[in-house]
Image (cartoon, rainbow, N blue to C red; front, side, top):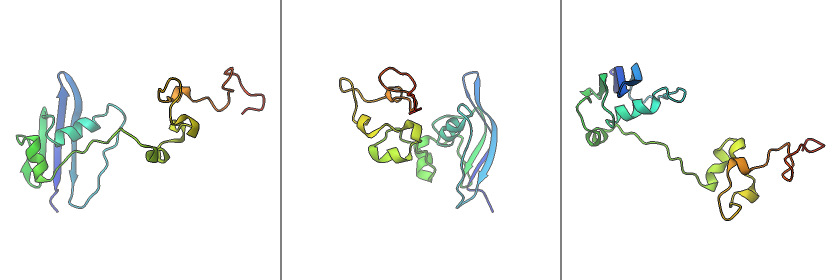
Length: 140
């Protein structure tokens, strides 16, 4: 089976800083692939390079048999390869998907203090009383 997307020894740099250091992988038609790594590992840079938004320092990217090295981003999209960055905006309906530590109590979601939105640091620690910031005698 021929790979739909083939990346070979891809290197990407921002000036002298090498952000992607020789990544290679293949994606066959119908596969779902995740690019996983820590912050700063080069995930976003790799995706932006595949989309044609950043030009690689070296290596090759082939999509459906066509080399993408000289293809502009808008043409790469028309070939069927697109980069859709995640949307960092959220709505109340999204709250159920956030980790519990990031959720605000219902009475704080509408904002507080002169109409400013509530921030994580404004939410009282579960083991402290909101008045004095001291531990509750029963640990609540």
